[in-house]
Amino acid sequence: MNRRRKEQILKDLHSKIVFLTGPRQVGKTWLAHDIAREFTHPVYLNYDNRGDREIIEKEAWLGSTDFIVFDEIHKMPGWKTYIKGIYDTKPAALKILVTGSARLEYFRQTGESLSGRYFTHRLFPFSPGELAAAGAPPDIDRLISRGGFPEPFLAEDSPSEKDAPPGGGETFASRWRKQYVDGLIREDVLDFEKFSDFKSLKLCLELLRSRVGSPVSYASIAGDIGISPNTVKKYIQVFEELYIIFRVTPFTGNIARSLLKEPKIYFFDTALVEGDEGIKFENLTALALAKEAAAEEDIKGIPAALHYVRTKDGREVDFCYTRNNKALFLLETKLSDSTISKNLHYFCAKYTIPGIQLVKDIKRERQEGGQIGIEVRSALPWLAELE
Image (tube, rainbow, N blue to C red; front, side):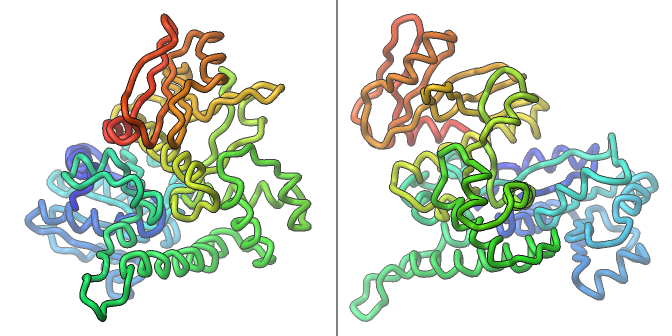
């Protein structure tokens, strides 16, 4: 299936290096190979491969090469200086794509500057919007149960023959996810940061899976595990840098203040969420909105972000989508209740912000709230309009 970012990446390659980042196994290497088919003499070089490493170190690709993919290049000492040198001295026809594990995004932001030489594209899991754009059914139930990572989402169900094992696709997705989580912790997390307490690290991740959608207290998690709140904060920071989770902070109109408040945690893999269908649907919506915000920044250069709103007395709305640090709309998720949320109505009226109540199963869309303008929308068509 064609990825939605492909055409924009091809455009950006004509003027800059392109960095392609995102979660492990989200399809970055597949997309790199797909883009390579658009060129006459492409070369794919993976720093983990000994032969490719020699070619990289000696810059020994052919002079006719018009496209190079550097995969896992961030593992090379001094890689940013190396890429800078290649870009500054390359022939005009040579285009460069740099991709790799999620650590690339972190390492890209430190050390030697590549300022003015690159564009970044963050590749997220499949969303209803991306599936709809590709002509595939934007199946919300499948995204909730399997997540949007290509392999488990696209795994075919077993044929209906009498002796065929039932639920082959679901079984594959479950097996894939177990190995995926083990790989994240044993290879990515422990390689990224040399944590000594593997047990508490894994337990922290497990606890986060059951606390999706609620403000997370570092002290509470620390007490459950028996470690310090600072250690929990460090674990969560690394999980976020490796695209395992993403934080949604309260919107106050002041970013510096909002970062000091308790965040809510969501997973890039919705199928990792433990809880009822409502929480999983909320995670799916959060991911679609975060993907939309990333697209606004990566493609349009417009600062966009996802927050939530909450008062000291406990009034809360699930999401506040901001552009240029200004609230664009408030959004509350519901499985089937189309009655307007009292909290959504309260915040929309108080701050004169448009509101959306996004309902997974609804018979008829409508608008309420008079001048406030609260829309009750069906989830599938609304989410399909996003990135």
